[in-house]
Length: 338
Image (cartoon, rainbow, N blue to C red; front, side, top):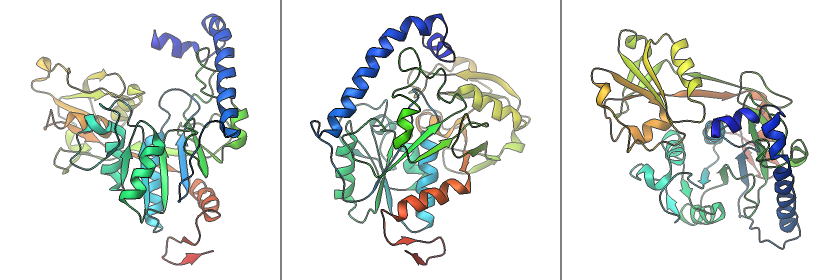
């Protein structure tokens, strides 16, 4: 049913039209909730440091986590201490947790664990992102900026910069849930969005572009590297528990790897119930996000990093926005700018 609904979102066909009255009601609720926050009838909290929200208005994965990692690395390069907060989708428990290298991914969620491992930045998860932000600043008072992974619709946390991420689907049929994929009306919501970043090969409309490709190596559980070129004669089974598994499989094949089998798993798959009787004699290869949960169970698996790079103009525009909110802004060369 989920795949059928996602296909229906691509156009305004019979199923989408059938769900359109429900989408109208959903739209009323969305606008009412936003109005309540604007009128201060629902409480919204401002942090003592700037908050950057990276999210999307389209349901499903669009590349938020790679964008967060790219932003954290960019900020680290210019000398800004950034922390990350997230809801920790798919984790067990609702409490506030600092994500450490030793934190089981079941307690943090796979994406926060990946962000922490990729950046070594402070990462906190909580059911309410505002609680995670408070805890982060209390534990790491030198933090200069918080990046919120997802949460465009989490208005309880006030934000200084909003970044909307779209993949190649764009806004699809342009209708709200459940008749379409939109969580909020678009392009109306775009009037308050500061930056739009496209993660697909071809931007669906105006905004900044990016490139994504696989690294030329895979990682073992111990962090050592294996050149992809050395795997040409290896019997490989590719696993992907991400929003768009086929995209990962296609990139593996484009890298010259012959895959004996490709197994698409549900997004945020926990691997607890993953059957492996037919895998003997094969090497499992997966994404870094999957490896967070797979490595503790299959230590001989390999993970291929994704190299995601927003265009330079995106970072220039981001720095210009940030300079108005965070002064002085360090330059990449260690000098201070106004």
